[in-house]
Length: 101
Length: 416
Image 1 (cartoon, rainbow over the protein chains, first blue to last red):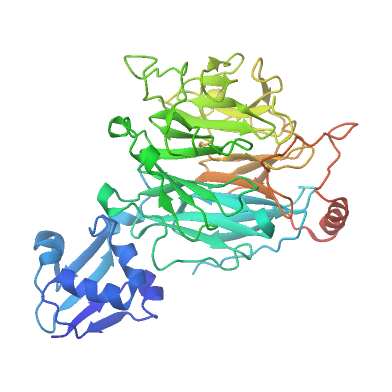
Image 2 (image 1 turned 180 degrees about the vertical axis):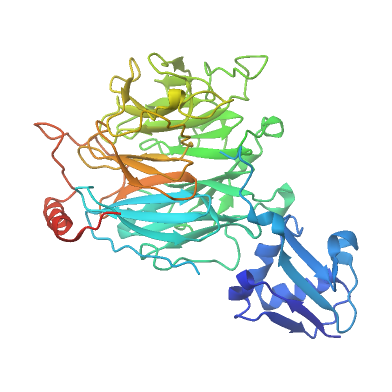
């Protein structure tokens, strides 16, 4: 089973410059596919996930065209030939709240 | 495409590390501090709330905490004055899984005592202290503070629940004071194993109980290496001094336009001289009356004088945040601060007069100063005796370096 993961430009320094990574691992969920990605490119993990094992607030992960926030999170199934995209959320580009001191 | 400029540093040069909401900058001058070269932006798009220079054990190392709203917070270092920075694959500062916490931001990077050059500390949000015993390679959470019984009831302030001030005692290796907004000041006398409050007498104006066991909103504490048990504290309303390492505090806000503010710095050689930058109030966090005034005490807080020469005194509604004021170690001392409006001001005469060093930056959140090649404030540091005869004289840490850098300044410094 092959899964393709698309890597945003800002994380490509941690994938040897690769914009897409094809995993031959037998991943059946997004979480398993990402775990295989972390194993191959560990630098991506701490940027996408926090210490609690959650996808960071301003990072979106899509399985196909659906955000996994609405499809079961990391348990979202992936099929053979499926595609996963890691995309920085538009909300993350702003400054912190003005009260941030 | 962002173009990053570099600076070249030499021993005797003064370095300002300026962290902003959208990247970091390095400002370099000779010991004359008359003209500044600017390097950066480093980490464009990332907020840089903490920077530090570690000159211990022959190092020339810069530290920066970078926070991407997308990708989280990472601690980075540079051994070539910003030409290259580490970008560790695995974040070195992480909460242990059993805490259930995740790092939001690194607020403070504090090199340890000079006689313990492998030790560094970081203060973070959510409020916690991390320690490194190997020069910053690996970090561990200080469990004594993290497991403090008060902790579940600490409340975040406007900037989050942050540990922003770390003061290792320069002589007593078992003692350290930290400050958390909003929790207060905590001190350890056993090397960090246990902590107790150190804010008795500090008023919490925003709580029904004005003197609670904890919950004070301490904005900044400063300590002088020659007199480390006397501390000065800028509170969320309130300006205080302690003469017993924080066991008790008394109010010293006489002669200031407001006792609200964030920034505070202590003179490098005179433990009686402290600088603050008062703001109107927590409801209007700008300089009172539109005047940008640094206030200085030279008698340990008995009285304060406004320092205005060279600072705008009309239409200057500025905000200076808690880590955005610093001093260098030359004589006379350089004093520096950055504003949320992206300006950096400096004085090279103990604060008597000021000039605009740089403007047009993103909001400034951190300013640190260092003299390159000079041993950092040491555990046994004594105040350097000021020179006789006026405050125009500039004494660099090494006379030969100073002469050399002044000659270079005259030849080639480029004003920015």
